[in-house]
Amino acid sequence: MKICVGLSGGVDSSVAALLLKQQGYDVFAMFMQNWHDTEGTLHGDCEWEEDRFVAEMVARKIGIPFYFIDLSHEYRQRVVDYMFDEYARGRTPNPDVLCNREIKFDAFLNAARRLGADFVATGHYCRKDAFTATDGRTVYRILAGEDSGKDQSYFLCQLTQEQLAQALFPIGDLDKAEVRRLAAGADLPSADKKDSQGICFVGKVDLPVFLQQKLASVEGDVVEVFDAWYADNPQYQRKREILDSLTVDGCPARMVTDYTGDNDVRRSVHGVPEHERGCDRARSVYDLDKVRALSDEDLKALAAPLAYDLEFETEVYRSGKKHLKKTRWKPHPYGVIVGRHEGAQFYTIGQRKGLGVGGHAHPLFVIGTDIVRNRVYVGEGHTHKGLSSSCVRIAPEDIHWIREDLRMELGQIRRYRVRVRYRQPLQDALLILRSSGLYILFDDPQRGVSAGQFAVWYDRDEMIGSGVL
Image (cartoon, rainbow, N blue to C red; front, side, top):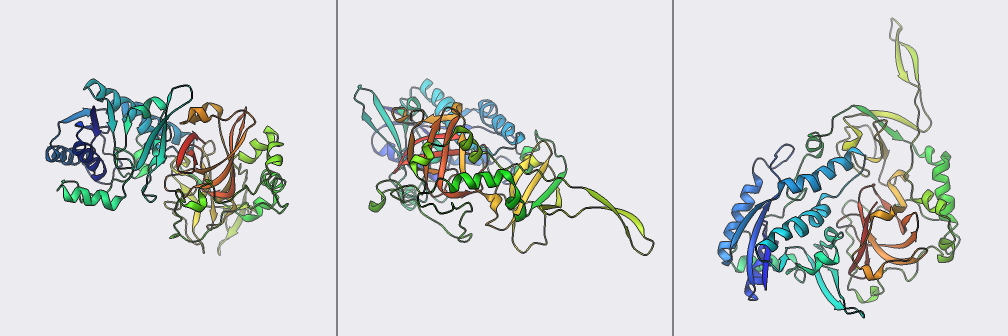
């Protein structure tokens, strides 16, 4: 069996190659270059050249053939252009998920096949297994990595059964410390190399500068939204009424995410005996019969982003000893213009840095953007109502089942654990499939959810499916 290892120059893929070689497989390494431009990157010029140099040294040390392939054209067309388009629409894409689906396990996999490979192996911290279905088909499963602090299954959430059939993840049963130990024991050049950060194959970037390669900077207003807006807004109040009508105990539903501090870290509970049912709670906080009775319109209302419709008027006043006429914004009960920005498309919900607005007792967070009006809406404090969402929707065409044999039927409700970003602790939720889409109703409100992110659902430690919000 011939295996191609996607060797990046990092310690994880290096140890993946080492283990496969030690297990007696016919292994070769291939390094892919996916990016040429350096504008907006924070690590200087030609970082990929250093990675290639290390990867080649690792291959030489292990004693396997080394190949180089330039996939920058495919990467720009299928990942970067998608990313630019999503940001232009005011959405928050995840290019790393797309890189795995479109590049590593498609363009790269095809190149490896041309060199005779039967499988492609990567250094992802996740596991794969398979079983034979009743109809004789082989069904492949993606499982979370044993190291819950490094589990990278999220990034593989868009893979198909066909792609999984030819994928290997040799380090999924190891933790990071053991990977480092194995690399050091084999004297690999990547043993002490720091983990890469930022966009897959681009590196760590100054996102606004990077996006300005294709998206123009246009100044607009930063608007702070006061708590009074939520008390009087019909859309927010309708969300509250619907959620309150669904609770098991008849108590008001929680609509604001608990905040326990910037340094709070909650671990995934996969593999912990008392949570083998897959969720923290034996049942949802919502009554299933009440949820089942919801109309599509009610579900759409729950999942719709809040539309901030503040309008500001100016007034003329006299200032100074000479009573010069000046113009200012009239006070508004629901908000205030607190600053200026360089383009709403450069901001994402939950963002804290880069606003350039001071004078507040608590930090400001982005709670919404309006691309048409070029506005950025912000709220003060970690528990601001605009940061929390209880329900999200995935359009029918964006629903992806890794386990195609577990597809939901229309009208069906299932209980899964869900995350909407990498490293987020898994969250208890109900999945509700309707003709208008898949709705995810979380037991606890979620913080900083943005359109364009990938929601991924798990049964215990198995990843079942995913979709774009």
